Amino acid sequence: MNLIRYKVKGGRYTGRHKITLGQSLMKKILAVLVLGSMSLSVFAQSEKTLDVKKIISINIEAKFATADQFDNFYIITHENEIIKFDSKGNELFRYSNSRLGDITYFEAANPFHLLVFYQMFNEIVTLDRTLSPSGGFHLTKIELYETNCLSIADNKNLWIYDKDNFQLKKFDFNGTPILASQQLNQIFKTKINPTIVKEVENNVYLFDKAKGIYVFDIFGKFLNFIAVEKVIDFTVLERNIFLFKKKKATNLINSIMMGDDYFYPSELTESGKLFFKNDKIFQVTRDWVSVFKIEK
Image 1 (cartoon, rainbow, N blue to C red):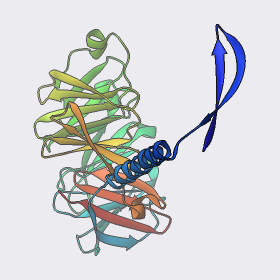
Image 2: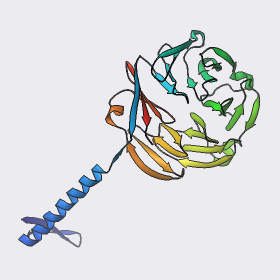
Image 3: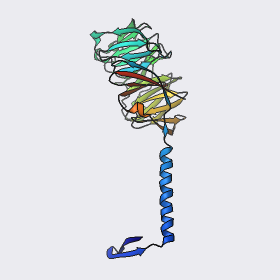
Image 4: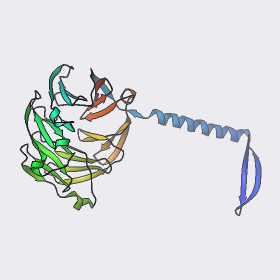
Protein backbone atom coordinates (compact mmCIF):
# COMPACT_ATOMS: atom_id res chain seq x y z
CA MET A 1 0.00 0.00 0.00
CA ASN A 2 1.33 3.45 -0.87
CA LEU A 3 0.66 6.68 1.04
CA ILE A 4 1.47 10.19 -0.16
CA ARG A 5 3.00 12.59 2.39
CA TYR A 6 2.98 16.33 1.76
CA LYS A 7 6.12 17.94 3.13
CA VAL A 8 6.29 21.52 4.38
CA LYS A 9 9.50 23.10 5.65
CA GLY A 10 9.69 26.55 7.14
CA GLY A 11 6.19 27.33 5.94
CA ARG A 12 7.20 26.37 2.38
CA TYR A 13 5.80 23.44 0.38
CA THR A 14 8.69 21.23 -0.71
CA GLY A 15 6.87 18.54 -2.73
CA ARG A 16 5.32 15.18 -2.10
CA HIS A 17 7.07 11.93 -1.28
CA LYS A 18 5.92 8.35 -1.75
CA ILE A 19 6.04 6.03 1.26
CA THR A 20 5.78 2.25 0.81
CA LEU A 21 4.36 0.27 3.72
CA GLY A 22 5.61 -3.22 4.42
CA GLN A 23 3.18 -6.12 4.81
CA SER A 24 3.78 -6.47 8.58
CA LEU A 25 3.07 -2.78 9.20
CA MET A 26 0.04 -2.95 6.96
CA LYS A 27 -1.35 -5.85 9.02
CA LYS A 28 -0.92 -3.82 12.20
CA ILE A 29 -2.80 -0.87 10.74
CA LEU A 30 -5.64 -3.11 9.58
CA ALA A 31 -5.81 -4.69 13.05
CA VAL A 32 -6.14 -1.25 14.65
CA LEU A 33 -8.86 -0.29 12.21
CA VAL A 34 -10.79 -3.50 12.92
CA LEU A 35 -10.48 -3.06 16.68
CA GLY A 36 -11.62 0.56 16.36
CA SER A 37 -14.62 -0.56 14.35
CA MET A 38 -15.46 -3.17 17.01
CA SER A 39 -15.18 -0.54 19.74
CA LEU A 40 -17.62 1.73 17.93
CA SER A 41 -20.01 -1.19 17.51
CA VAL A 42 -19.84 -2.07 21.21
CA PHE A 43 -20.39 1.58 22.13
CA ALA A 44 -23.46 1.80 19.92
CA GLN A 45 -24.89 -1.36 21.46
CA SER A 46 -24.36 0.02 24.98
CA GLU A 47 -26.99 2.73 24.49
CA LYS A 48 -29.80 2.10 26.95
CA THR A 49 -33.49 2.15 26.09
CA LEU A 50 -36.01 3.39 28.62
CA ASP A 51 -37.88 0.37 29.95
CA VAL A 52 -41.60 1.08 29.60
CA LYS A 53 -44.73 -1.04 29.57
CA LYS A 54 -47.89 -0.07 27.72
CA ILE A 55 -50.83 -0.04 30.13
CA ILE A 56 -53.72 0.96 27.92
CA SER A 57 -54.71 2.74 24.70
CA ILE A 58 -57.92 4.75 24.35
CA ASN A 59 -59.37 5.60 20.95
CA ILE A 60 -60.04 9.34 21.25
CA GLU A 61 -58.89 12.64 19.77
CA ALA A 62 -57.15 14.63 22.50
CA LYS A 63 -54.63 17.37 23.21
CA PHE A 64 -53.51 16.39 26.73
CA ALA A 65 -53.57 13.43 29.12
CA THR A 66 -52.56 12.75 32.73
CA ALA A 67 -53.35 10.46 35.67
CA ASP A 68 -53.96 10.52 39.41
CA GLN A 69 -52.45 8.33 42.13
CA PHE A 70 -55.21 5.72 41.73
CA ASP A 71 -54.44 5.26 38.00
CA ASN A 72 -57.54 7.06 36.86
CA PHE A 73 -56.81 8.76 33.55
CA TYR A 74 -57.89 12.26 32.50
CA ILE A 75 -58.02 13.30 28.87
CA ILE A 76 -58.63 16.83 27.58
CA THR A 77 -60.19 17.02 24.13
CA HIS A 78 -59.71 19.73 21.51
CA GLU A 79 -63.12 21.05 22.60
CA ASN A 80 -61.71 21.60 26.13
CA GLU A 81 -63.76 18.83 27.66
CA ILE A 82 -62.20 16.84 30.51
CA ILE A 83 -63.03 13.13 30.47
CA LYS A 84 -62.18 10.81 33.36
CA PHE A 85 -61.50 7.09 32.76
CA ASP A 86 -60.79 4.29 35.20
CA SER A 87 -57.63 2.18 34.96
CA LYS A 88 -59.32 -0.18 32.45
CA GLY A 89 -60.34 2.63 30.10
CA ASN A 90 -64.00 2.85 31.09
CA GLU A 91 -65.39 6.36 30.93
CA LEU A 92 -66.55 7.69 34.30
CA PHE A 93 -67.32 11.42 34.16
CA ARG A 94 -67.12 14.53 31.96
CA TYR A 95 -66.70 18.26 32.56
CA SER A 96 -66.68 21.27 30.25
CA ASN A 97 -67.06 25.03 30.57
CA SER A 98 -67.24 26.79 27.22
CA ARG A 99 -67.64 30.18 28.91
CA LEU A 100 -64.03 30.22 30.12
CA GLY A 101 -62.32 29.25 26.86
CA ASP A 102 -59.25 27.03 26.52
CA ILE A 103 -57.92 25.01 29.43
CA THR A 104 -54.37 26.21 30.04
CA TYR A 105 -53.46 23.82 32.85
CA PHE A 106 -54.98 20.75 34.49
CA GLU A 107 -53.63 18.96 37.58
CA ALA A 108 -54.80 15.68 39.09
CA ALA A 109 -52.33 15.37 41.97
CA ASN A 110 -55.30 15.20 44.34
CA PRO A 111 -58.10 13.14 42.73
CA PHE A 112 -60.62 14.67 45.15
CA HIS A 113 -59.50 18.22 44.43
CA LEU A 114 -58.70 18.63 40.73
CA LEU A 115 -57.27 21.89 39.45
CA VAL A 116 -58.29 23.57 36.19
CA PHE A 117 -56.78 26.88 35.10
CA TYR A 118 -58.18 29.17 32.39
CA GLN A 119 -55.46 31.72 31.66
CA MET A 120 -57.59 33.81 29.30
CA PHE A 121 -59.91 34.74 32.17
CA ASN A 122 -57.24 34.34 34.89
CA GLU A 123 -59.57 31.93 36.69
CA ILE A 124 -59.05 28.74 38.67
CA VAL A 125 -61.78 26.10 38.95
CA THR A 126 -61.60 23.09 41.26
CA LEU A 127 -63.44 19.83 40.61
CA ASP A 128 -64.35 16.92 42.88
CA ARG A 129 -63.84 13.24 42.03
CA THR A 130 -66.96 13.26 39.82
CA LEU A 131 -65.69 16.30 37.87
CA SER A 132 -68.34 18.50 39.45
CA PRO A 133 -67.25 22.10 40.25
CA SER A 134 -66.34 22.46 43.93
CA GLY A 135 -64.80 25.93 44.06
CA GLY A 136 -62.42 28.39 42.48
CA PHE A 137 -61.49 32.07 42.28
CA HIS A 138 -59.99 34.75 40.05
CA LEU A 139 -56.28 35.32 40.46
CA THR A 140 -56.90 39.05 40.33
CA LYS A 141 -58.30 38.57 43.84
CA ILE A 142 -54.74 37.92 45.03
CA GLU A 143 -53.27 40.58 42.73
CA LEU A 144 -51.84 38.15 40.20
CA TYR A 145 -52.69 39.41 36.74
CA GLU A 146 -50.56 37.25 34.47
CA THR A 147 -49.29 33.80 35.39
CA ASN A 148 -48.78 30.48 33.66
CA CYS A 149 -47.00 28.55 36.40
CA LEU A 150 -49.08 26.94 39.15
CA SER A 151 -49.89 23.56 40.68
CA ILE A 152 -51.40 21.76 43.66
CA ALA A 153 -49.52 22.11 46.96
CA ASP A 154 -49.67 19.36 49.64
CA ASN A 155 -52.92 18.12 48.04
CA LYS A 156 -55.02 20.98 49.42
CA ASN A 157 -53.34 24.29 48.63
CA LEU A 158 -51.83 26.05 45.63
CA TRP A 159 -48.33 26.93 44.46
CA ILE A 160 -48.07 29.92 42.10
CA TYR A 161 -45.02 31.68 40.72
CA ASP A 162 -45.50 35.45 40.91
CA LYS A 163 -43.33 36.67 38.06
CA ASP A 164 -43.98 40.35 38.85
CA ASN A 165 -42.40 39.95 42.29
CA PHE A 166 -40.06 37.03 41.41
CA GLN A 167 -41.47 34.86 44.18
CA LEU A 168 -42.83 31.36 44.64
CA LYS A 169 -46.03 31.73 46.67
CA LYS A 170 -48.44 29.41 48.42
CA PHE A 171 -52.17 30.08 48.79
CA ASP A 172 -55.22 28.20 49.99
CA PHE A 173 -58.13 27.79 47.61
CA ASN A 174 -59.88 30.81 49.04
CA GLY A 175 -56.96 32.93 47.86
CA THR A 176 -55.53 33.44 51.34
CA PRO A 177 -51.71 33.74 51.27
CA ILE A 178 -49.79 31.14 53.32
CA LEU A 179 -46.13 31.83 52.52
CA ALA A 180 -43.76 33.32 49.96
CA SER A 181 -40.16 32.66 49.01
CA GLN A 182 -37.41 35.23 48.97
CA GLN A 183 -37.38 37.31 45.80
CA LEU A 184 -35.40 35.13 43.41
CA ASN A 185 -33.94 38.01 41.42
CA GLN A 186 -32.04 38.96 44.59
CA ILE A 187 -30.52 35.48 44.78
CA PHE A 188 -29.64 35.01 41.11
CA LYS A 189 -29.33 38.59 39.91
CA THR A 190 -31.20 37.60 36.77
CA LYS A 191 -34.79 37.22 35.67
CA ILE A 192 -36.18 33.70 35.49
CA ASN A 193 -39.21 32.52 33.57
CA PRO A 194 -40.48 29.21 35.01
CA THR A 195 -43.32 27.37 33.30
CA ILE A 196 -43.66 24.33 35.57
CA VAL A 197 -43.88 23.98 39.35
CA LYS A 198 -44.20 20.58 41.08
CA GLU A 199 -44.30 19.48 44.70
CA VAL A 200 -42.83 16.01 45.17
CA GLU A 201 -41.76 14.33 48.42
CA ASN A 202 -41.45 17.51 50.51
CA ASN A 203 -39.57 19.42 47.83
CA VAL A 204 -40.87 21.99 45.36
CA TYR A 205 -39.33 22.13 41.89
CA LEU A 206 -39.55 25.27 39.77
CA PHE A 207 -38.56 24.67 36.14
CA ASP A 208 -37.26 27.26 33.68
CA LYS A 209 -36.67 25.65 30.26
CA ALA A 210 -33.91 28.11 29.41
CA LYS A 211 -31.97 27.76 32.67
CA GLY A 212 -32.83 24.72 34.76
CA ILE A 213 -34.57 23.51 37.92
CA TYR A 214 -34.78 25.54 41.13
CA VAL A 215 -35.37 23.38 44.22
CA PHE A 216 -37.15 24.61 47.37
CA ASP A 217 -38.34 23.02 50.57
CA ILE A 218 -42.06 23.00 51.37
CA PHE A 219 -41.66 26.27 53.28
CA GLY A 220 -40.44 28.10 50.20
CA LYS A 221 -36.76 28.17 51.22
CA PHE A 222 -34.42 27.92 48.24
CA LEU A 223 -32.18 24.83 48.43
CA ASN A 224 -30.26 24.47 45.17
CA PHE A 225 -30.22 24.98 41.43
CA ILE A 226 -29.76 22.27 38.78
CA ALA A 227 -28.55 23.60 35.43
CA VAL A 228 -30.03 21.62 32.54
CA GLU A 229 -30.46 22.21 28.80
CA LYS A 230 -32.95 21.14 26.13
CA VAL A 231 -35.29 19.59 28.70
CA ILE A 232 -39.04 19.67 28.02
CA ASP A 233 -40.24 18.20 31.32
CA PHE A 234 -39.09 16.22 34.32
CA THR A 235 -40.37 13.84 36.97
CA VAL A 236 -39.14 12.68 40.37
CA LEU A 237 -39.19 8.95 41.12
CA GLU A 238 -37.98 7.89 44.57
CA ARG A 239 -35.89 11.11 44.73
CA ASN A 240 -34.27 10.37 41.38
CA ILE A 241 -34.92 13.15 38.89
CA PHE A 242 -35.57 12.08 35.31
CA LEU A 243 -35.08 14.81 32.72
CA PHE A 244 -37.21 14.29 29.64
CA LYS A 245 -35.81 15.53 26.35
CA LYS A 246 -37.07 15.21 22.80
CA LYS A 247 -35.70 11.71 22.18
CA LYS A 248 -34.33 10.51 25.51
CA ALA A 249 -34.50 10.74 29.29
CA THR A 250 -31.53 11.38 31.59
CA ASN A 251 -31.48 10.55 35.28
CA LEU A 252 -29.72 12.73 37.85
CA ILE A 253 -27.78 10.97 40.61
CA ASN A 254 -28.47 12.64 43.97
CA SER A 255 -30.01 15.53 41.99
CA ILE A 256 -26.53 16.71 41.05
CA MET A 257 -24.53 14.43 38.74
CA MET A 258 -25.73 13.45 35.29
CA GLY A 259 -26.38 9.72 35.14
CA ASP A 260 -27.34 7.47 32.25
CA ASP A 261 -29.18 8.43 29.08
CA TYR A 262 -32.23 6.32 28.28
CA PHE A 263 -33.50 6.59 24.73
CA TYR A 264 -37.24 6.23 24.23
CA PRO A 265 -38.39 3.04 22.55
CA SER A 266 -39.38 3.52 18.91
CA GLU A 267 -43.11 3.20 19.63
CA LEU A 268 -42.89 6.40 21.71
CA THR A 269 -41.08 8.45 19.08
CA GLU A 270 -42.90 7.41 15.91
CA SER A 271 -45.65 10.02 16.19
CA GLY A 272 -47.65 12.26 18.50
CA LYS A 273 -46.86 14.30 21.59
CA LEU A 274 -45.52 13.02 24.89
CA PHE A 275 -46.67 14.11 28.35
CA PHE A 276 -45.15 12.97 31.64
CA LYS A 277 -46.61 12.42 35.12
CA ASN A 278 -44.70 10.60 37.86
CA ASP A 279 -43.97 7.10 36.46
CA LYS A 280 -46.33 7.48 33.48
CA ILE A 281 -45.71 8.63 29.92
CA PHE A 282 -48.73 9.63 27.83
CA GLN A 283 -48.50 9.47 24.05
CA VAL A 284 -51.16 11.54 22.32
CA THR A 285 -51.55 10.89 18.60
CA ARG A 286 -54.27 11.94 16.19
CA ASP A 287 -56.83 9.31 17.25
CA TRP A 288 -55.32 7.59 20.26
CA VAL A 289 -54.05 8.19 23.78
CA SER A 290 -51.63 5.49 24.96
CA VAL A 291 -50.37 5.22 28.53
CA PHE A 292 -46.95 3.75 29.35
CA LYS A 293 -45.47 2.98 32.76
CA ILE A 294 -41.77 3.50 33.42
CA GLU A 295 -40.43 0.25 34.84
CA LYS A 296 -38.08 0.88 37.77
